[in-house]
Image (cartoon, rainbow, N blue to C red; front, side, top):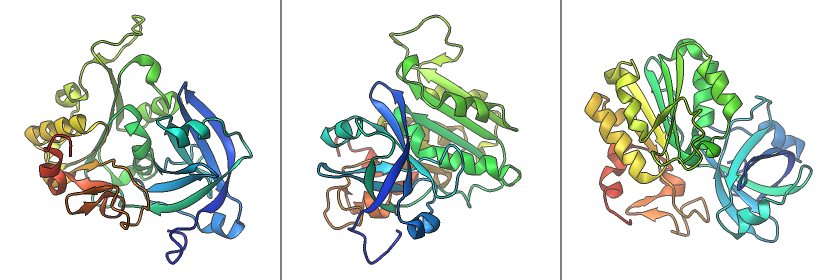
Length: 285
């Protein structure tokens, strides 16, 4: 956090760019209005901020790498799912929001060095793994092969197209896409697979025993990804998932995000798969 003794106070940030990604998905690119905060702010891939829409409420949103890699800038890609995010959809460049954070655990970037890295996402689960992917690409000689698999329910839900194209053209990197088998907007031009993201596992050409898998998406998808990669030879401790629950305080006080003994906001949201395997197997928990 910016100030560990002031975890409840949001700090003012200005929207330097508002990007509409989809009819109900948008990205806000931010900078703090306080120059001192602006110069100090940093985050680790996988962490989240609490974004306060003044007068309406606060939501937990994963931090996306700044697309221009500019120091002091950070982004949040947000889908409209309630009254706070519905209101935030009307924000414009120059408007202000409050920011608390960063909070939570992060992706195992140090542990992944020297290993092949597989990023598997579904829906807007690609946003929390942008920073991790960029960190691999910026330190390319420290990691093995990079594979990025992304699943969407239909072709019109694909965001970050320019970024995926750049990644796909990077050394030792491949990007693969999948839509649902019943893609309603199929125009006959889709060159990727239809069906589950796990269908790509046999084509990855990686050393499964020396790989790290990071996955974000619907929990049934993450469960399937974890099980299929372990079956293919990945070590369970090298499979990581990110859990999503209703986070309110972000510091483990309110209990809204509690899952068993875990406070997802404080103990997660990124976990090694064995740490949450039993909890994820309980339907509806």
